[in-house]
Image (cartoon, rainbow, N blue to C red; front, side, top):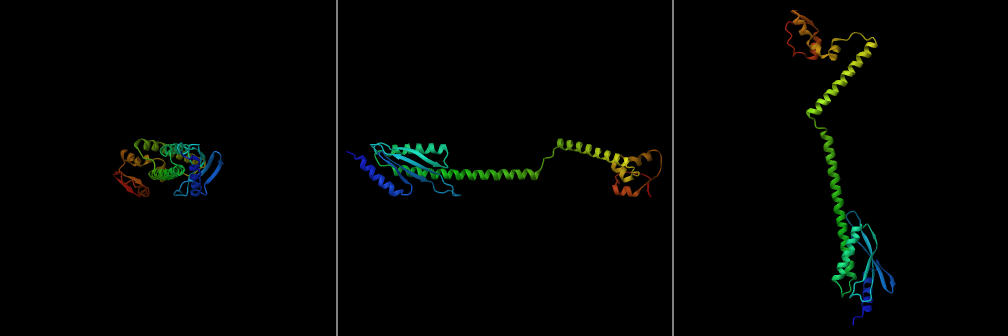
Length: 231
């Protein structure tokens, strides 16, 4: 006949010697105790931790002990559910043998796996942020892609703005009584002036006096001005 009480006392002594700093007896009837299990440290020193509470039943180890997660740190709800499922599986596989050490070892391995998953998530998040930063820098460097449509829209808007500025400036100068505009200023305000000399030729004149300085400054050599002489 199995002496369950004896097996439980022997296991309890062994557990206390294996986990002296994390083992705590809560009660003696029924025998209930906790064991705190902490993962190995991750790359940045992060850890996860859980405190397991075990309670012996009368026929343990032929029947599984009772267990619960007494407390936890840095574990998500899904992690705690996985741990409880793992304890159930391990208990079923070890019925008839004292199993507390086996259960705690399985949980320890699970916690280490959780830390590894956390590390992978952190690395993926880091790579994602780096990629986003690179894409943002690339977009900023390239600027807006110019198409025919947006160029024509910009050009129309720009010409309207420049015409309005010229109109305002001319009005301000007229109100201030400024002197008559020079040829250069007239040219800047009305680019049609570059064809005015041709009109003189069409009127039958053989030669026209043109300010050579103006022609040189605005590089109007593209005009075919027959009979033009510089003064």
